[in-house]
Amino acid sequence: MPALVALRLANAEAHLALDPDVYRRPQRTAVIEHFTAVLSDATGRNAVLVAEQDGQVVGMVEVLRQPEPPAHQILRPEPSAQIHTVVLGEARGRGVGSALLDAADRWAAEHGLINLSAGIHHRNASAVRFYRRHGYAPSGTSWVRRPAG
Image (cartoon, rainbow, N blue to C red; front, side, top):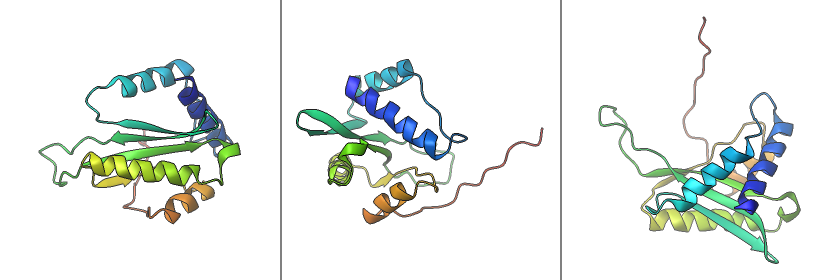
């Protein structure tokens, strides 16, 4: 648990440097509650897979299953998950992220998922390159508008 929390908080710091108007530093207690819930869920609905080097956790990938669309909507149900990959700075460029994505792919296939998605901020050029190199591509467009009130 301490390693997962440290990874999430380090990732938050990196993203704050990227764009503080988009990202935030989550409260440590909220991060602990999240990982406690994911790791204690006996249904196997989600996964947290880690990479270790020399006995130290240097990266993780979360595979978080997305809810099926409600029966009243027109979207066809396709078992999908969103992934969140984090690799410590000193471990980058050594294949850790690639190994994590491979593990996430295997886990997803074993659990009947047919789509994996990664939410990437368009300004995070290194993440865009990384995911593109691993076969991820843009899908759809989100349109946003703030209410006029």
